[in-house]
Image (cartoon, rainbow, N blue to C red; front, side, top):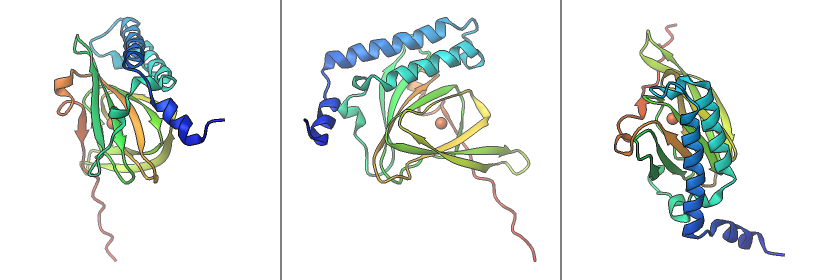
Length: 202
Ligand SMILES: [Fe+2]
């Protein structure tokens, strides 16, 4: 029987051909999600698209060759994003995010639809409600998002969250954003301030 370390090494090793094939399966599933939606202008408003995107991400969980070992490499400073594919028609970009212990995203809503799956490790997702009067995000609750978790959301401040790695091990997540690759840094996250609590006066 192989030792656990040997099994991990075997599961991490895939050929370039296997990576390309896995990616072809993933992009075909994404294309099918778009094809299922009659209103592609904002596909996040289409239930079939949301189901299709979740299905694509769920299938990706069973396709470890999709993200190469190089695309699972992190950074000591902050979470690292590897853009691993972009749609030739500019409809979406796919990225792997690598989170070392203690790394966290900013609190943010989204300017576009996005979906993600946790491939390795466990992230914590904290959800917020937008407080228009105080112009800030108010924390609601947190929950663990373990390997296998899949999420999809539309744009707007009704879906505000923050992802963080509170564990003692690396985590990797796969994200699909509804923008062309050149817009991934500027047109995805709507970074928001935490609401300021009013000091109690005694
Ligand atoms: Fe997000």
